[in-house]
Length: 208
Image 1 (cartoon, rainbow, N blue to C red):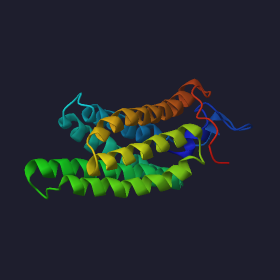
Image 2: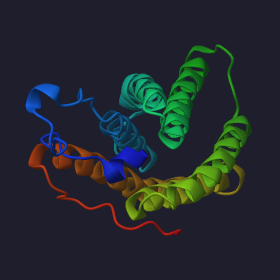
Image 3: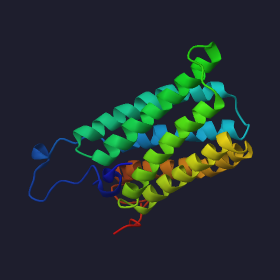
Image 4: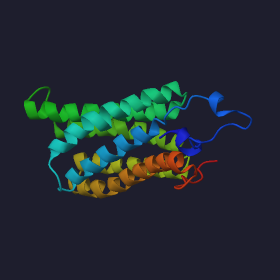
């Protein structure tokens, strides 16, 4: 979810006229961790939503990779001056930590929340995602699609909590697409660095 996903240069590139000894210090792209944490945690949650796995693995992966690792990636985006990546990775890292703590709280009887409460929790994140979707559509086509499918997934989950539980399964399959797109974005940044060329293009943004 970083602008650097779209414009990152290969690791081997050195500005013309510079010697290797004077090459600028290379930093990793935080998006490779942020997108992986977001994508894998989202994917595993959808495996649960469609009935393939129990909630246990979702909670632990969500806390560590979807939560902590994604938040760290967001803080690294702050250092890079990327407000979009800073907001997205840090916020969705907080989302995962909050969601997992809600699940743990319900299981242990500590600060339990009802289904309607979780529904309103998801509605709040739907509004945030709608704002970020507009920004994502200005960065690249793939990033735009990640957020469009994420927004659609949140809407479906809202309906699942306030209307009919069948929307949970529909959201599960739809958000698997979102997770796949996030992992594609991660692979784009990794392969760009490894191969020194754009193996998996992100595409032109929807908004000019």
